[in-house]
Length: 113
Length: 116
Image (cartoon, rainbow over all chains, first blue to last red):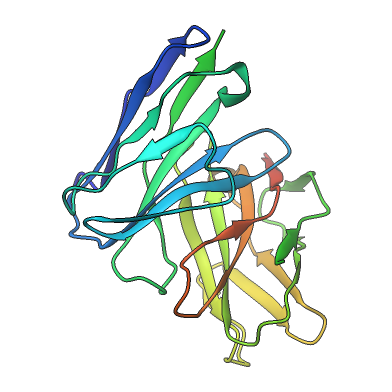
């Protein structure tokens, strides 16, 4: 079972470059979300979606865009990368909004120089 | 605002012994979930155990159990018969069960090392 798949696993960017982190799930989950993990700060919610066509902001949305055109995919876009966006990014999904059990991808380590 | 606090950045335990990881949280809500997630060196987060706030009985999953003290807003994780594979970062997390959000709020984590 693939579960939640994130690509790429590693990426190095220069300040000002743009890129998209891909996330796909094959479990027909309605809820999908993006977190970033920084040392000493746990995981913080960037954006989330409760279904195709619906997205909303989390705790730290600035500098990131998302869209949800299908149930399976939830890409995260960095429009103009900054060193402060160096982090490990996790995509997570759950079957039903409100149940809370999230299934995570393996993470994407992004370094912005 | 809801917060989750894990006051133990690192802990160590001998194989086969028992260890307890602490977690406290702050909320004015009455209906919520609490979770412990495990993040091994491979990085992928795995759900260890879940507790619903309205249930008084403490959740148990094999060697993992919680001590949920609602009035004290405390949610500790006990790992019995520790195994080398339990070595990981453990995150406590909180979620309000309401119609407005499905956001998990995480603590900063406790790095557990199981020593042979």
